Amino acid sequence: MKGEGVLLKQERQQKILEILNGEQRVIASDLSQRLFVSEDTIRRDLKELDNKGLIRRVHSGAMRIGPPVVDFSTRKNVMNELKMDLAKKALEFIKEDMVLLIDGGTTNLHFVNQLPLTLKATVITNSPPIAMALTNHNDIEVIMIGGTLFKESMVNLGVNTVEFLDNIRADLYVMGIHKIDPNIGISVPSLGEAEVKRKMASVSNEILAMVTSDKLNTFSNHIVTPASALTYLITDNDQSDILSSYHSQQITVVNE
Image (cartoon, rainbow, N blue to C red; front, side, top):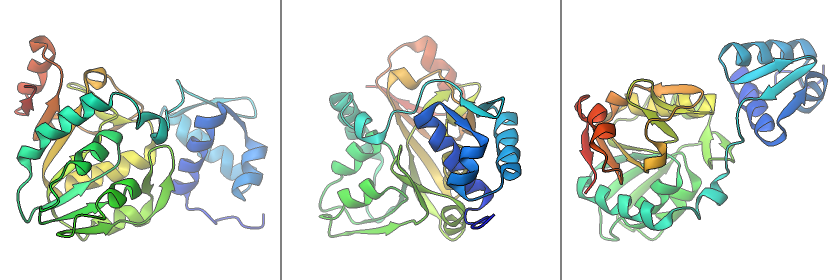
């Protein structure tokens, strides 16, 4: 078929997940035409995604598992005051001349919006909104990681994104959190996002996450890291029975 191989397998499967997020159900023959690959290639992709628990294969195609992922522009206007409070608490862990790795998320966007204009640091990000928010910080060097834009989360993903991360080392990774459970770990619904987050964690000395109560003790389809990978967990939750499971994993929990 003309155009076959335009997308790498990982990128093609990520695109399938994005299509399913918007349409709930897809037909293999339709995906074949939209992604410029053979139906056999699509069927193999759907089988792999089904085996990973990311979709459910049905006759002639596949269905989305669970509710759709809410897009970035919608989430940006939810719980703003709470997210700003968490962001303010995170500022105490930021020091001059740090190399900060910051991925996507609306709470992370609140965080960078509150960084002092006088801060001297380097910020490496795969999120266009994060990079744009720092345009007036004259003493922050902003390094933008390229890739394929995942519009639901407004982050760049893919092979090029992961390969770029092979060449950096960060003092602190500010990780956007979709779901976190003390036993299952940190998880996201997107395969590509999980791979990039996992790589970011591996090249960082410490990891900080700002997590609203509704995300604690929940999980999604694809595991990023164990919860114990976090150095700092900043949350609004004050229930000791919930937080004790994170304390026991040597995570510094900040909730005041």
